Image 1 (cartoon, helix red, strand yellow):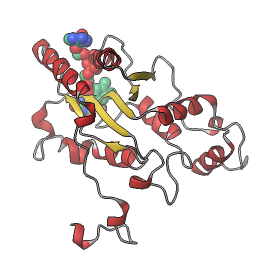
Image 2 (tube, rainbow, N blue to C red):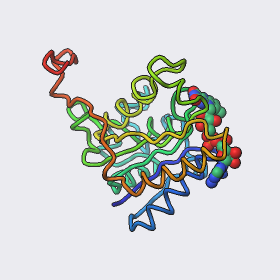
Image 3 (cartoon, protein in one colour):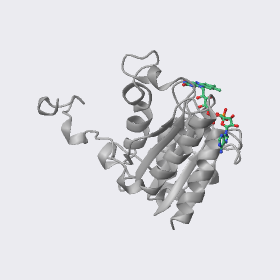
Image 4 (cartoon, rainbow, N blue to C red):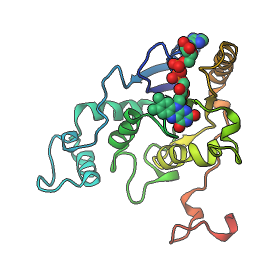
Length: 236
Ligand SMILES: Cc1cc2nc3c(=O)[nH]c(=O)nc-3n(C[C@H](O)[C@H](O)[C@H](O)COP(=O)(O)OP(=O)(O)OC[C@H]3O[C@@H](n4cnc5c(N)ncnc54)[C@H](O)[C@@H]3O)c2cc1C
Protein backbone atom coordinates (compact mmCIF):
# COMPACT_ATOMS: atom_id res chain seq x y z
CA UNK A 1 0.00 0.00 0.00
CA UNK A 2 0.94 3.64 -0.34
CA UNK A 3 0.88 5.03 3.19
CA UNK A 4 1.01 8.72 4.08
CA UNK A 5 1.80 9.79 7.64
CA UNK A 6 0.78 13.30 8.64
CA UNK A 7 2.85 14.00 11.74
CA UNK A 8 2.35 17.01 14.02
CA UNK A 9 4.67 17.32 17.03
CA UNK A 10 7.28 20.02 17.65
CA UNK A 11 9.82 17.68 19.32
CA UNK A 12 11.44 14.85 17.29
CA UNK A 13 12.40 12.99 20.51
CA UNK A 14 8.80 13.03 21.80
CA UNK A 15 6.70 9.91 22.22
CA UNK A 16 4.72 10.99 19.15
CA UNK A 17 8.04 11.12 17.31
CA UNK A 18 8.77 7.57 18.49
CA UNK A 19 5.38 6.33 17.23
CA UNK A 20 5.96 8.02 13.87
CA UNK A 21 9.49 6.57 13.56
CA UNK A 22 8.20 3.12 14.47
CA UNK A 23 5.51 3.37 11.79
CA UNK A 24 8.03 4.37 9.12
CA UNK A 25 10.36 1.51 10.11
CA UNK A 26 7.74 -1.22 10.37
CA UNK A 27 5.63 -0.25 7.35
CA UNK A 28 8.69 0.08 5.13
CA UNK A 29 9.99 -3.32 6.32
CA UNK A 30 6.57 -4.79 5.46
CA UNK A 31 7.03 -3.59 1.87
CA UNK A 32 4.71 -0.58 1.92
CA UNK A 33 5.62 2.73 0.28
CA UNK A 34 5.70 5.38 3.00
CA UNK A 35 5.69 9.19 2.80
CA UNK A 36 5.75 11.50 5.83
CA UNK A 37 4.55 15.07 6.08
CA UNK A 38 6.43 16.27 9.17
CA UNK A 39 4.47 19.50 9.57
CA UNK A 40 6.77 21.24 12.10
CA UNK A 41 9.93 20.26 10.18
CA UNK A 42 8.28 21.60 7.01
CA UNK A 43 7.31 24.77 8.88
CA UNK A 44 3.89 24.15 7.39
CA UNK A 45 1.82 27.32 7.25
CA UNK A 46 -1.25 26.86 9.47
CA UNK A 47 -3.11 30.06 8.60
CA UNK A 48 -5.67 29.97 5.83
CA UNK A 49 -5.47 33.26 3.91
CA UNK A 50 -5.36 34.82 0.46
CA UNK A 51 -1.77 33.72 -0.16
CA UNK A 52 -3.10 30.17 -0.55
CA UNK A 53 -4.15 30.98 -4.10
CA UNK A 54 -1.98 31.92 -7.08
CA UNK A 55 -4.87 33.82 -8.61
CA UNK A 56 -7.92 35.13 -6.80
CA UNK A 57 -11.33 34.99 -8.43
CA UNK A 58 -12.46 37.96 -6.32
CA UNK A 59 -9.67 40.33 -5.24
CA UNK A 60 -12.08 42.54 -3.27
CA UNK A 61 -13.59 40.08 -0.82
CA UNK A 62 -11.94 36.87 0.31
CA UNK A 63 -14.49 34.09 0.49
CA UNK A 64 -12.08 31.31 1.33
CA UNK A 65 -14.16 28.27 0.29
CA UNK A 66 -15.10 29.88 -3.05
CA UNK A 67 -11.45 30.62 -3.78
CA UNK A 68 -10.65 27.00 -2.92
CA UNK A 69 -13.24 25.86 -5.45
CA UNK A 70 -11.76 28.19 -8.04
CA UNK A 71 -8.20 27.04 -7.31
CA UNK A 72 -9.29 23.40 -7.58
CA UNK A 73 -10.76 24.11 -11.02
CA UNK A 74 -7.76 26.10 -12.27
CA UNK A 75 -5.06 24.12 -10.43
CA UNK A 76 -3.84 27.35 -8.82
CA UNK A 77 -3.41 26.45 -5.15
CA UNK A 78 -0.13 27.58 -3.62
CA UNK A 79 2.65 24.97 -4.12
CA UNK A 80 2.65 23.79 -0.46
CA UNK A 81 -1.07 22.95 -0.64
CA UNK A 82 -0.71 21.25 -4.03
CA UNK A 83 2.11 19.09 -2.72
CA UNK A 84 -0.02 17.81 0.19
CA UNK A 85 -3.01 17.21 -2.07
CA UNK A 86 -0.86 15.17 -4.46
CA UNK A 87 0.35 13.05 -1.53
CA UNK A 88 -3.28 12.43 -0.52
CA UNK A 89 -4.20 11.28 -4.02
CA UNK A 90 -1.15 8.97 -3.99
CA UNK A 91 -2.09 7.40 -0.64
CA UNK A 92 -4.22 4.32 0.00
CA UNK A 93 -4.02 4.79 3.78
CA UNK A 94 -3.38 7.95 5.79
CA UNK A 95 -2.14 7.96 9.39
CA UNK A 96 -2.46 11.13 11.48
CA UNK A 97 0.07 11.15 14.34
CA UNK A 98 -0.44 13.90 16.93
CA UNK A 99 -0.78 14.64 20.66
CA UNK A 100 -4.28 15.54 21.83
CA UNK A 101 -4.21 19.29 22.44
CA UNK A 102 -7.31 21.01 23.82
CA UNK A 103 -9.44 17.98 22.94
CA UNK A 104 -8.30 18.29 19.34
CA UNK A 105 -5.34 18.39 16.96
CA UNK A 106 -2.44 20.87 17.35
CA UNK A 107 -3.06 24.12 15.44
CA UNK A 108 -0.53 23.24 12.74
CA UNK A 109 -2.55 20.13 11.88
CA UNK A 110 -5.86 22.00 12.06
CA UNK A 111 -4.36 24.47 9.58
CA UNK A 112 -3.36 21.55 7.36
CA UNK A 113 -7.01 20.42 7.28
CA UNK A 114 -8.27 23.98 6.68
CA UNK A 115 -5.95 24.50 3.71
CA UNK A 116 -5.46 21.03 2.18
CA UNK A 117 -8.95 19.55 2.60
CA UNK A 118 -10.23 22.16 0.18
CA UNK A 119 -13.67 22.71 -1.25
CA UNK A 120 -13.61 21.43 -4.81
CA UNK A 121 -10.75 19.09 -3.95
CA UNK A 122 -12.04 16.80 -1.17
CA UNK A 123 -15.70 17.85 -1.15
CA UNK A 124 -18.42 19.66 -3.03
CA UNK A 125 -22.14 20.15 -2.45
CA UNK A 126 -22.88 16.68 -3.79
CA UNK A 127 -19.67 14.97 -2.73
CA UNK A 128 -19.27 14.58 0.99
CA UNK A 129 -19.09 11.78 3.54
CA UNK A 130 -19.55 8.47 1.71
CA UNK A 131 -19.29 10.28 -1.63
CA UNK A 132 -16.42 12.60 -0.64
CA UNK A 133 -13.65 12.87 -3.19
CA UNK A 134 -11.09 10.88 -1.14
CA UNK A 135 -13.36 7.83 -1.23
CA UNK A 136 -11.54 4.53 -1.53
CA UNK A 137 -8.86 5.44 0.99
CA UNK A 138 -8.68 4.63 4.69
CA UNK A 139 -7.40 6.77 7.52
CA UNK A 140 -6.41 6.27 11.15
CA UNK A 141 -5.84 8.68 14.01
CA UNK A 142 -2.87 7.79 16.21
CA UNK A 143 -2.84 10.05 19.23
CA UNK A 144 -1.54 10.45 22.77
CA UNK A 145 -3.19 12.02 25.80
CA UNK A 146 -2.31 13.73 29.05
CA UNK A 147 -5.41 12.49 30.89
CA UNK A 148 -5.84 8.80 31.73
CA UNK A 149 -8.17 6.41 29.93
CA UNK A 150 -10.80 6.61 32.74
CA UNK A 151 -11.23 10.34 32.09
CA UNK A 152 -12.29 9.58 28.53
CA UNK A 153 -15.08 7.09 29.30
CA UNK A 154 -18.76 8.07 28.89
CA UNK A 155 -19.04 9.23 32.53
CA UNK A 156 -15.42 10.37 32.77
CA UNK A 157 -14.36 13.96 33.40
CA UNK A 158 -13.22 14.62 29.82
CA UNK A 159 -16.00 12.71 28.05
CA UNK A 160 -16.14 9.68 25.80
CA UNK A 161 -13.04 9.74 23.58
CA UNK A 162 -14.86 8.35 20.54
CA UNK A 163 -18.20 10.15 20.70
CA UNK A 164 -17.19 13.49 22.17
CA UNK A 165 -13.49 14.05 21.51
CA UNK A 166 -12.39 12.37 18.28
CA UNK A 167 -15.78 12.49 16.54
CA UNK A 168 -15.20 15.94 15.07
CA UNK A 169 -12.00 14.70 13.45
CA UNK A 170 -13.09 11.21 12.40
CA UNK A 171 -16.55 12.21 11.22
CA UNK A 172 -16.22 15.95 10.57
CA UNK A 173 -12.91 15.91 8.71
CA UNK A 174 -11.86 12.41 7.58
CA UNK A 175 -15.25 10.89 6.75
CA UNK A 176 -16.55 14.22 5.41
CA UNK A 177 -13.76 14.11 2.83
CA UNK A 178 -14.66 10.55 1.81
CA UNK A 179 -11.95 8.77 3.77
CA UNK A 180 -12.96 5.62 5.63
CA UNK A 181 -11.82 6.14 9.24
CA UNK A 182 -10.72 3.05 11.15
CA UNK A 183 -10.56 2.72 14.93
CA UNK A 184 -7.94 5.09 16.39
CA UNK A 185 -4.77 4.06 18.19
CA UNK A 186 -4.50 5.84 21.54
CA UNK A 187 -1.52 5.89 23.89
CA UNK A 188 -2.91 7.14 27.21
CA UNK A 189 -0.67 9.36 29.34
CA UNK A 190 2.65 8.20 27.84
CA UNK A 191 4.62 10.73 29.87
CA UNK A 192 4.00 8.88 33.16
CA UNK A 193 5.55 5.47 32.89
CA UNK A 194 8.30 3.76 30.88
CA UNK A 195 6.58 0.35 31.14
CA UNK A 196 3.42 1.77 29.58
CA UNK A 197 5.45 3.37 26.80
CA UNK A 198 7.14 0.06 25.96
CA UNK A 199 3.75 -1.65 25.89
CA UNK A 200 2.24 1.05 23.63
CA UNK A 201 5.12 0.71 21.17
CA UNK A 202 4.56 -3.07 21.06
CA UNK A 203 0.80 -2.63 20.66
CA UNK A 204 1.31 -0.09 17.89
CA UNK A 205 3.72 -2.42 16.10
CA UNK A 206 1.06 -5.17 16.16
CA UNK A 207 -1.50 -2.69 14.87
CA UNK A 208 0.81 -1.62 12.02
CA UNK A 209 1.26 -5.24 10.99
CA UNK A 210 -2.53 -5.61 10.72
CA UNK A 211 -3.53 -2.29 9.13
CA UNK A 212 -5.97 -3.82 6.67
CA UNK A 213 -7.79 -5.70 9.45
CA UNK A 214 -8.57 -2.70 11.69
CA UNK A 215 -12.36 -2.30 11.90
CA UNK A 216 -13.76 0.81 10.25
CA UNK A 217 -15.92 3.17 12.29
CA UNK A 218 -19.51 2.47 11.19
CA UNK A 219 -20.81 5.90 10.15
CA UNK A 220 -24.08 6.37 8.27
CA UNK A 221 -24.01 7.05 4.51
CA UNK A 222 -25.69 10.28 3.38
CA UNK A 223 -28.63 8.26 2.02
CA UNK A 224 -29.64 7.51 5.63
CA UNK A 225 -30.47 11.20 6.21
CA UNK A 226 -33.56 13.07 5.04
CA UNK A 227 -33.71 16.45 3.29
CA UNK A 228 -33.44 18.21 6.68
CA UNK A 229 -30.17 16.39 7.46
CA UNK A 230 -32.00 14.24 10.02
CA UNK A 231 -31.28 10.54 10.39
CA UNK A 232 -34.28 8.69 8.95
CA UNK A 233 -36.41 6.91 11.56
CA UNK A 234 -35.55 3.44 10.26
CA UNK A 235 -31.83 3.98 11.00
CA UNK A 236 -32.21 5.29 14.55
C1 LIG B 1 -1.32 22.85 24.36
C2 LIG B 1 -1.60 21.52 25.03
C3 LIG B 1 -2.91 21.10 25.16
C4 LIG B 1 -3.19 19.84 25.71
N1 LIG B 1 -4.49 19.43 25.78
C5 LIG B 1 -4.77 18.21 26.25
C6 LIG B 1 -6.11 17.71 26.24
O1 LIG B 1 -7.04 18.37 25.81
N2 LIG B 1 -6.31 16.46 26.71
C7 LIG B 1 -5.31 15.67 27.19
O2 LIG B 1 -5.56 14.54 27.60
N3 LIG B 1 -4.02 16.11 27.19
C8 LIG B 1 -3.73 17.34 26.73
N4 LIG B 1 -2.43 17.77 26.69
C9 LIG B 1 -1.36 16.83 27.09
C10 LIG B 1 -0.77 16.13 25.85
O3 LIG B 1 -1.76 15.43 25.16
C11 LIG B 1 0.34 15.16 26.25
O4 LIG B 1 1.35 15.91 26.86
C12 LIG B 1 0.91 14.43 25.02
O5 LIG B 1 -0.08 13.65 24.43
C13 LIG B 1 2.06 13.51 25.41
O6 LIG B 1 2.66 13.02 24.24
P1 LIG B 1 4.11 13.55 23.80
O7 LIG B 1 4.53 12.86 22.55
O8 LIG B 1 4.12 15.03 23.75
O9 LIG B 1 4.94 13.03 25.02
P2 LIG B 1 6.44 13.38 25.47
O10 LIG B 1 6.34 14.16 26.73
O11 LIG B 1 7.22 13.95 24.34
O12 LIG B 1 7.01 11.94 25.75
C14 LIG B 1 6.69 11.23 26.89
C15 LIG B 1 7.91 10.43 27.30
O13 LIG B 1 8.18 9.44 26.30
C16 LIG B 1 9.60 9.35 26.17
N5 LIG B 1 9.95 8.67 24.92
C17 LIG B 1 10.20 9.22 23.71
N6 LIG B 1 10.55 8.26 22.83
C18 LIG B 1 10.48 7.07 23.50
C19 LIG B 1 10.72 5.73 23.14
N7 LIG B 1 11.09 5.38 21.88
N8 LIG B 1 10.55 4.77 24.05
C20 LIG B 1 10.17 5.08 25.32
N9 LIG B 1 9.96 6.35 25.72
C21 LIG B 1 10.11 7.34 24.83
C22 LIG B 1 10.04 10.79 26.25
O14 LIG B 1 11.41 10.89 26.54
C23 LIG B 1 9.18 11.30 27.40
O15 LIG B 1 9.78 11.04 28.64
C24 LIG B 1 -2.13 19.02 26.18
C25 LIG B 1 -0.80 19.49 26.07
C26 LIG B 1 -0.55 20.71 25.51
C27 LIG B 1 0.89 21.17 25.39
